[in-house]
Amino acid sequence: MALMLVDARGMSCPEPLLMTKKAMGESPAGFQVIVDNNTARENVARFAKGNGYCVKVEQDGNDYVLTITRE
Amino acid sequence: MDDKKGIVLAGAVIGALAVVLVQAGNAVNYGLCIACFIRDTVGALGLHRAEAVQYIRPELLGIGLGAFLAAAIKKEFSPRGGSAPLIRFVLGFFVIIGALMFLGCPLRMVLRLAGGDLNAVFGLLGFIAGIVTGIYFLNRGFSLKRTYALSRAEGYIFPGLNLAVLSLLAAAPPFILFSVKGPGAAHAPALLSLAAGLVVGVAAQRTRLCMVGGIRDAVLFREWYLLSGFLAIFVTALVGNLAVGKFNLGFTGQSIAHTDGLWNFLGMALAGWGSVLLGGCPLRQLVLSGEGNIDSVIAVLGMAAGAAFAHNFGLASSANGPTFNGQVAVIIGFVVVLAVARFHMDKSPAVKMKGGMKVGSDVG
Image (cartoon, rainbow over all chains, first blue to last red; front, top):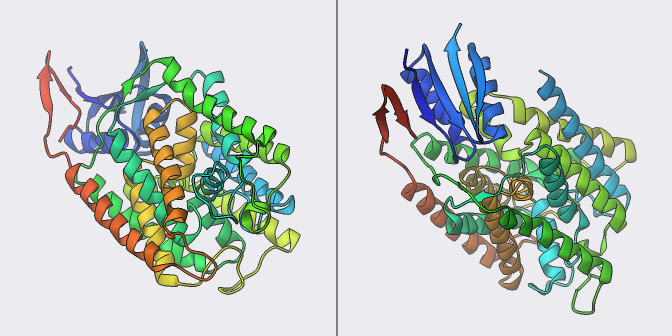
């Protein structure tokens, strides 16, 4: 299944979270977010977990891919 | 949950250090203030000539260096920039104009509240109003666009600058100006100030502590993480001030403060709004600068320029209240920040399909 991919690399606080929030509305079942720093990774993961999502984080070079799914 | 304990602990340490710094010589409710410390430091460098507020603040330099060291050790030092640099300079400039109307950055606002200074209640209300205004634009697509990776050398300039200014404090050549009276003359021993700054820089870097982010995230996402750090600073400084007899409840007779509620409100409204658009309060900009974020360095340089202009043009308030020039500058600030917000609302959805995946910077 191809998940919607949100590219939040290079975006400053709080834009990665706003994009994640928007994605929850667009694709409530699940989606992926790419970020390029620890702060955004922590913030997006904390926010998704707080909204009842499961979060899987994979490192891809300097980026992090967060797979956010209902589970 | 663990990270929440971390930020509460960081806030408690910062609140306690603020009280310790006052006990050791800083002016009352002046333990930590990024806006004031930038203003004092540019004064010492001779960029303004307000004789009462000239001192190279080791706390300020320590925060930048502490954030740099923490980021370097944790492999989070990552030079990047290119996201609307001149806009960030301008926003930094007006954040300080607003802060010096109120007489304090958001961090000092919390410390003033913790010292019983009720004028800061108007500041807090303005700060919240400014943040909510900023959120209005964030919700409508406000963005200063992406940052890009830069060379490591670029990232070393800011910590290098901090070290250079610190060496000027140590060497004290005749062209560096030091206040002999006033807030600039009231300071803790330099080594204690530097050590406190280093601790604050490390703590704030590790926890991402941000005064603006606390209220912004609570309103925007019902996310309380950053706000818990903000509250921990308040509670610890309040307890500390009560313990050492520095709690003085009221409006009048407060240290480095004035009683004009309207302009306290408007000053912090401008600082709050500008900071939301920058993505963080002056403390956070300083910490990000240490991490190699050149956009934040530009914002800090804008703050330094703003602080110098604030005293050269008579814009900063004093204990006697705001100045007419300062009121005009704050109004100009609102117009400029509104223009920045209005012209950076990104309406383009920029979503495309790529290999069966929807890819976009904006999923709307």
